[in-house]
Length: 196
Image (cartoon, rainbow, N blue to C red; front, side, top):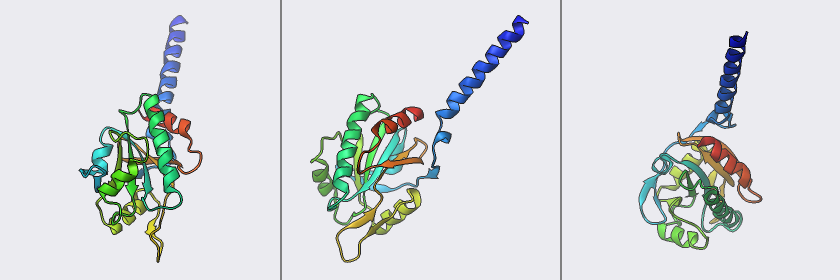
């Protein structure tokens, strides 16, 4: 009788442990989109790629452009706040922030460096990307992030997604969050911790 109780207790423990592990995997997230690679140049003029930045790190990405007169400034300010919260949680070695320009013709590395300099940021784990063609970024945003990236006709403004996107170390888009007003910082930190 006692052996049966011990076996039952072990079986229950294994069941609960398996349940916890399953909950912490990519399977618990709503999206499962494989993110393609994007070869780019960062704000420091260094050639890189999204795959290189994603290697061994969880990525939080967004789409911006420096001439934006609406959502990009608050989004970048919110990403700066997120970077501080990630550091406060001791997760800065696990996470790479990536801001992807949808206006590569204007947003040169020098322009992105000046733009990023307006914010309190650490470029050790926050890259601003450019250096590809407009066709490449439009296709990349549409296919890999299921979001638009297109110039407004007759304007220097662009339509683009306003979310922060969570990408696993395996290069899979798992979730998106509000990026402009009231981003769910605590939820993002919890989700990052689930993937660690």
